[in-house]
Amino acid sequence: MSTIQSAHASPVILAPARDAGISRPLVFLMAAGAGLAVASLYYSQPMLGVLGADIGAADQTVGWVPTLTQLGYAFGILLLAPLGDRIDRRRIILAKTAILAAALLTAGFAPSIGGLLAASLVLGLSATLAQDIVPAAATLAPAEHRGRVVGTVMTGLLLGILLSRVVSGVIAEHYGWRAVFVAAAGSIALLGVALWRGLPRFKPTTDLGYGELLGSLVTLWARHPGLRRAAIAQGLLSVGFSAFWSTLAVMLHGAPFHLGAAAAGAFGLAGAAGALVAPVAGRIADSRGPALMTRLGAGLAALSFAAMALSPLLPEGGRLWLLVASAVGFDLGVQASLISHQTIVYGIDPAARSRLNAVLMVGMFIGMAAGATLGSQALAIWGWNGVIAVATAASTAALILRLFTRSDR
Image 1 (cartoon, rainbow, N blue to C red):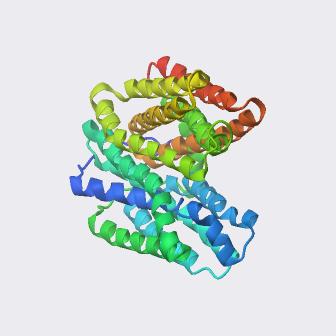
Image 2 (image 1 turned 90 degrees about the vertical axis):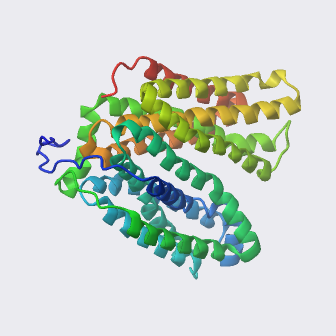
Image 3 (image 1 turned 45 degrees about the vertical axis):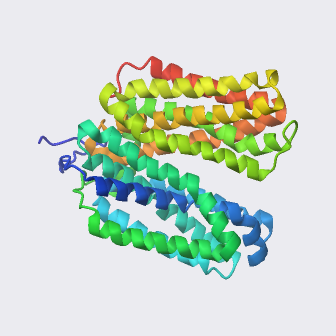
């Protein structure tokens, strides 16, 4: 195999390992690992009220628990995920698993809000093991089945996001908030044992130093138009996704619905549709090409957001059902596009999959943050129709970008 040039000025002297294949039990183990890892980010959200009262902290201070968790995850993707190209991914995954279990246990026994906040930051950083597992699965999968394998692992990740709030709410109600973190630590410890026994070793694909490794992210962005298009398109879809979810509870609380937080939380079940469609999207990406799925996904998202503009023409019950149907539709579109964009990105340069994934995920996080800001501003100035306009415009822009894409390299 010929020497592969790095995304930096110096050449890479390590050739990427060949696709070694991946068994079905290992796929399911990696899916479970991605789900349990990312679930750690969301356990705290449903129990912040109980947590604050028990630990003696003000609501504003307790609000920093999920904030620091998410910030830790974002910084972990940017600063730690690229190491998967430099160090055996198995070592990284097992190390992060141990740190995550310790952080969750520390959070469960935290005597004060200060200790809980520190544990939350470490928790977010180490939960990025989910973003090490996904490129690891892509590396093990044969090229002709990469979309399906990535889709299955992403199903686990998405189900982790979907079910984490439900599980933590039930456990916290019956056994207290500390029991949630302790139980989560136990699940991660068991996961670590299973991964230690089942996960193969991965040959590093670059010998770049840490500084050069981070610098190569910029070079990869400049060198590969396919990476730029994938990150920008998925970021635009994330703008609409985040604009909707960050304003939904406020909108439902007002006229004409006057619904509480429980109703808004129930809308999260629409995420199950995205989780279930992930393997299907992966199979279509394998057989028909990922570019087609990115267009179909972006088109479905744009259409679903635009359909919500018809809400004033319907009775109150019809408006609610339209919201539900639109939420299912755009979630399907966004998740199908994500799987397809990951398939595209992982095929660009096998020696840089961890860094390529980091760039794609950073693009998503930027879109999420922008969507939350734009959605809140639009709701305050123009009402719910403003939110719909922002989401529709962003998704349409993603569709246009994908429609005029000729190459994904």
